[in-house]
Image (cartoon, rainbow, N blue to C red; front, top):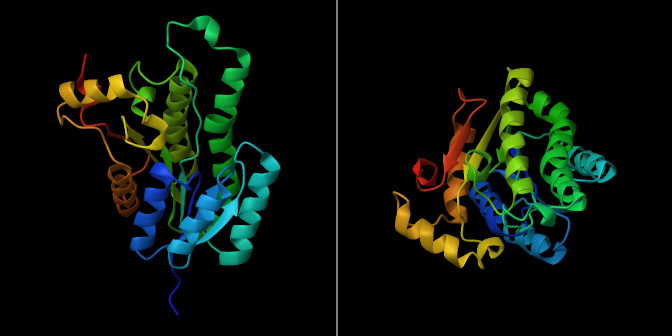
Length: 243
């Protein structure tokens, strides 16, 4: 029986991560669904997909990350694709400097930057062994232009963008590393962003907000683009073109 490529999508119990998991599964990949909070949703998604499983792990916890990849190796013996989607934010107006405490910085950077880093490092032996290993980081347009739900969030995504390029240069040719940078995507995270949503729908070139499937399709497209590495590809309806 032919080996089915294995993909791990962090933070995939809902929203963008769940859409990515579904899209990769539809392409015939074995998908490892991951999350740390909504276990029931993660297990339900894994049950919905063929050849999928759910593994609970907090990517900010080094011990849980090690256990996650130990289980992936024991269960599947391989990993072709890691999608670093897990992330957190806090909605704090950029002008509210006092509202950004040290604890806010630590909470966001621990998951978005350090978590992404240690998950990627832990996955590297399996990715290298596959011969076609690929990492796709889910960033944000906030890492490219001065936007985003808070300054620490935007800084964390900018760090992910540069990390993507640095890693791509460091781990090739065995492993490719790319990133997708979404604009406003309609998910439970953004359902209260009414003012921003209206601005996106009236001012951006494509005149609409994005969907999780928009991001999932781009992740798959990058995975198929075997000669592409070190790229941060925007999927924001043209929001980055606005002054």
